[in-house]
Length: 382
Ligand SMILES: Cc1ncc(COP(=O)(O)O)c(C=O)c1O
Image (cartoon, rainbow, N blue to C red; front, side, top):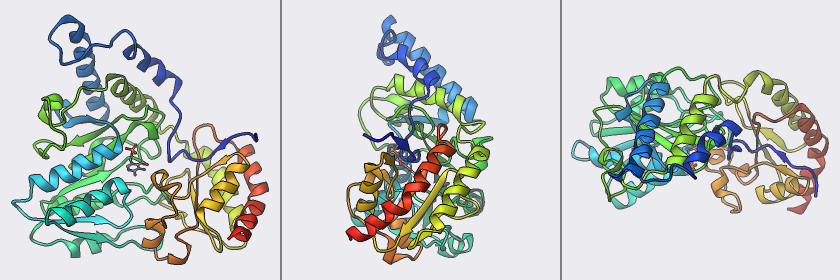
């Protein structure tokens, strides 16, 4: 078996050792249900309240503005379904972008298909960026809600989120941003920097545990719940809280977000080396923007080949990459992001390398040495 080179940190990261240590007592000693009134439940309740206070303090929010969720998917679902439904008496027009993660896009598809909403999906330019002008033009009297991601998971494009937020604020439209890929990678000061009413965050993208996330909801906004049952999370998200995951999320926020655990300065030479290698390979075309892009992400397409052959070829050499969002890996579905940037003919052949804390130049050199041959074989295979 060849050595493992993991260049897929946008899919997930390993658990940080300190975060793991913070989490473990909640899998063993502190196992009570925070909703129980007896003494076994009271300690986990106090620790849950404390975790919410810490998350709020870190983000610059009020504790009541934090809803713990099972991750980015649930945070997006709650933001989109919950807000669209809560505001439907005011209007049923929603705006998003064509390159959102499926955890956002599929919510809009559902609302359009089954609940009578009308959805505008803003186009993007060749770098995957929306235009704020297009957003302004798309706004209608019945527009209630806009959702645009902060950073794209497939190609790394950063969106002008604060500008979008300012437009929405002025037009009294609720704005949500999926910031799942941005936390731990870009500078974070305060939740106010997004100028958003709702922000989705997910722990396993910055060395926290899987199955842990949160939705920031600016008060007094009150999205309709999407989970029903007990009165957890202030009646906004039913279900016994996953305390180990919540503690891990908060520990990862405190340790890995500011300064960002993904170190831009360290990545610069790695990214430069990889890009210069990719640009020399016949048929390869870089699709990640050179500026205003996540500093750890290099995505390119490969003419005359497809994602499955490319991933298999890389994997045989021990190299972990992605052909789009991890959720569509294994299927031959073309990347909706590459389609949206207008490269229909290469939408099946995306390769995404995403670096993390442990990535080294030596690994990049190894990949650069064998990449031309892996790509040549994948092109022949087709
Ligand atoms: C931008 C973005 N949003 C949402 C998600 C969903 O997060 P999860 O699958 O952890 O719920 C992901 C995961 O890849 C993502 O990259």
